[in-house]
Length: 374
Image (tube, rainbow, N blue to C red; front, side):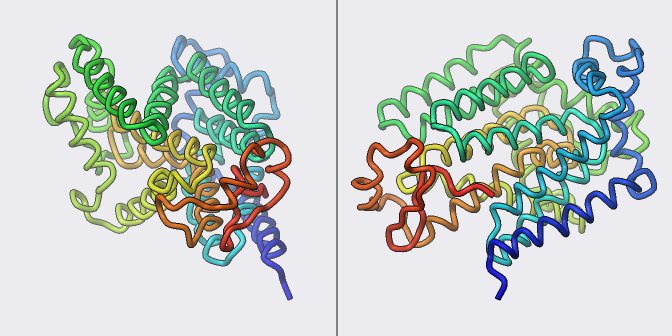
């Protein structure tokens, strides 16, 4: 009889073999737009100054350190990602879900050297830290990775850290703190000057202009800001409009691709929403991952111009969704707000190495602060 662990390893082997075979023939297999950003990065690696001072230049310097090994490193990241994703899948439906989450990430991020390839690597490192290191060190690892990436490549990753921290505080804090954080956030955003709103949301309009005028790949799901992003009122209207356009795309453009993208978004976000909704039976590290994932959503809604770009960036942290799904399966049977006796007695004070290596149970589910790793 094949055990669930063996089934997971077989699925990881098969998926990795399929990925590597596709990687070898990617030039003939993939559409041109997949290589668009990679070509800009490669130009910087070869010494071009066309994108000097941009994120393409910064990430190009990283890949230039790898020399001729860049493609090998990308393939290795892809195999690590696939094996880690399927390592958290035990049942058949979880394996199918993992494969569904893997495909967009591999398609957009793991066939060419891109900025999001590095984000995939960061997500693997963070999940490894969450599963194997003490809580504080895992938290420091996550913050350090995002801060370094924000400093060198994409500055808005600092906003993702901030948004994730706000979400985590709102979920875990008492009502007074929740009210203070909520009022304070609104006050800070409303006090921003018009230039700040333009800096946050203006890139969407410029990206859509480029897609409509210059891109050979079209702009079927692209959209402009509804009103000028130069005031708090405009910010709220544009943000709400973008959130609906990006997360409920079939309402505006019904088609097969849009439906599949919508299903991916739901599969990626539902575990995070559930982990925060069930915060009293979810471990703090799992709600931390959920907050970070929703931080990606909150910041992406600011400037993403179309559904494809939104999905590409979200897929780079699909591993968080799979880990949260494993945690959701582990706590199946509990209800929001219901305390677990084992959690409050046996688990108290055991968030260090002892808890990480033991699977405790209460009415069936595993309640360690991090689910067992792959």
